[in-house]
Length: 120
Picture 1: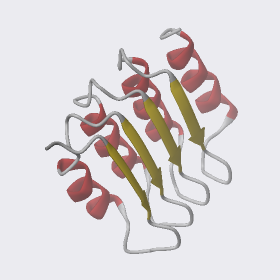
Picture 2: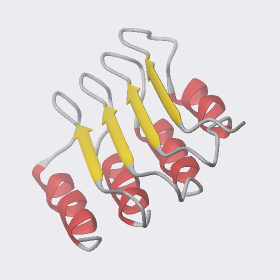
Picture 3: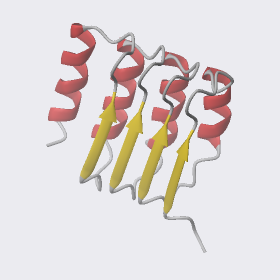
């Protein structure tokens, strides 16, 4: 039996930082169809977002993705990595990406939007 849906909220866990995200990312099951992760108000930054993006790129069966990074230190680089990864997943049909109250700038938003638009 392989796991098809994974939902975890790490809300307000300051120990969920880039190192913890890297370790968590390495354990993502490759056959997931739905992934819901909440990193709200955690210590996650660009490096952790990049690790997650790299791990997600191997989950080619993903159809639904909901990621919330509100209140983290994810910035332009992390958002770019996530957007490129999500855009490369052929089966994704439903996407919700929460980036409120992060370090993302207008330039990062434009880059992320361009990456995601290329997948449409």
